[in-house]
Length: 453
Image (cartoon, rainbow, N blue to C red; front, side, top):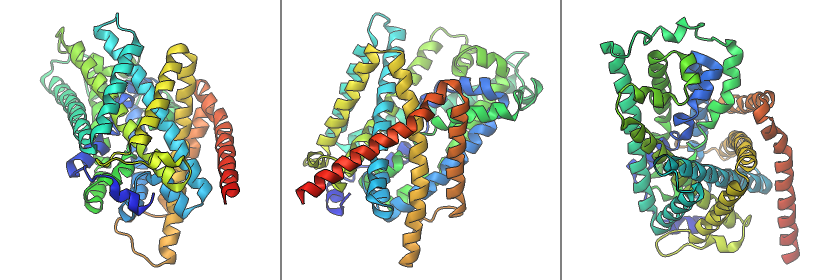
């Protein structure tokens, strides 16, 4: 994205906004709803799995952070791949990330509809999805500060809920009110720390990594951050602590309160821990928190989607009209276009509720792997350029280039796990077809450019 257009974006995201955006990006349905499945596969060793995934995410964020601090531009993934790799890499990276986010938006809207039905089962899911679709997009069209304040509020609710669950669970353990089955020994007494062997942990890693698929939003928000050289490093460095607190510590408490095999069979572990309160209103509180998490993810993802589309337009990889920014510094054309495509996805999910949803979510997982691999490889190109011009960066990544290769190898291993998982194999099969579509689209774009010159 050009520096001129970047300056038109309002720097409405303060330090507290960017900190909460980074935190909110890693707390969503993956934590609130996905833990049961990973616990079923790995047992207590899922704690180690989330720690490993958090470390990989931290390496990746340090790589992204180094590039973003040097050049805080909107649509950062695509911009860096375009500048430091080649135009096709920028095209593929940008459109892959945009489609990924559109599909995530669709999934979160569908989840919102289901959560609303808990209170009002007579309301069709598409009605609730449409209502929040309009609300969030109106917010994104108002001012970036409004988006920041909304995400700030959503994240506070999620954080308060998690801290409350950790605190209450610790009190139950310490006071003895959790019952006879509650004990820290649950972490190793029921078949050991690896009840399903190392294979169980490995097979859970693909689902675990999906939980971290939103933290890169910090890079997208960089162009609208007041002081990226200060706020971005703080947000990135604190990711490792957030992972330990909000994932690892939460699971340690849950598995101490309940035997892991009962949690796997009983649905959401958060439902179980709230049920310990013995209150009729607890389920409502839980549903409100999960609903808030889904709204938050949709809010943040829709923001990232529009900024990536703006960056693609600035590179010439998307139609020129998508570069339009209004007097409030809002890229309204990119927001409305992304919203329109997201709405189509919601309609498709309504018409084909089972097949469309599973197929699109498989593509989401594939797109995440592609995105993170390209990010690590792009950073290698970036560092080479910096070394060539003998420039010392302000926020260097950790252990370059070793951590880059670790991230790439880890992503390849995730693809192998997905291939060995019957329900996820379709995601791996779709990757070459998706890359072929992107290649064909780039060829058409290049041909059109050559004809116009």
